[in-house]
View 1 (cartoon, rainbow, N blue to C red):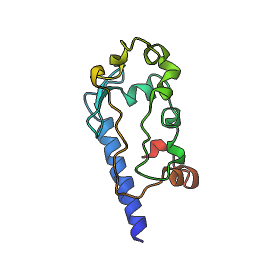
View 2: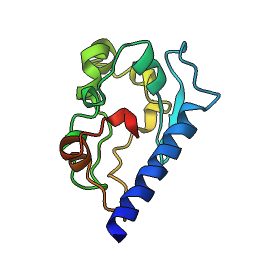
View 3: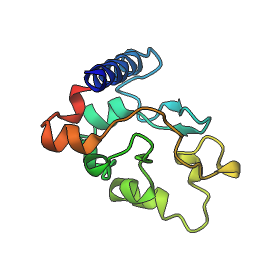
Length: 138
């Protein structure tokens, strides 16, 4: 019973975060780039809204491939260069690294950050495979 309530609380929290982020006034679907600061202080230029509505990326697994098999809330599901290269090969494969500013707001200080430690119990795999819950639901 407690586990069921925990899952409900987590789903509600994720839903509220999604609603908050989707209603952010600084996000403009017509704009290709919007500064985003993740929970670990990294700052990149990216817009989920643009990629989903304008660029036509409708499957979250395109960028977050490991999400559907993720069993732990602490799994790092952040998109990486391999996910972006499909559409942004020129910017990602820039040997001179002069185009890093296309995504990274501070290209002189790009740091790999480990996944955040999370205390909640959550399995994307259980929700997407067994429960047949689509990513956009949350």
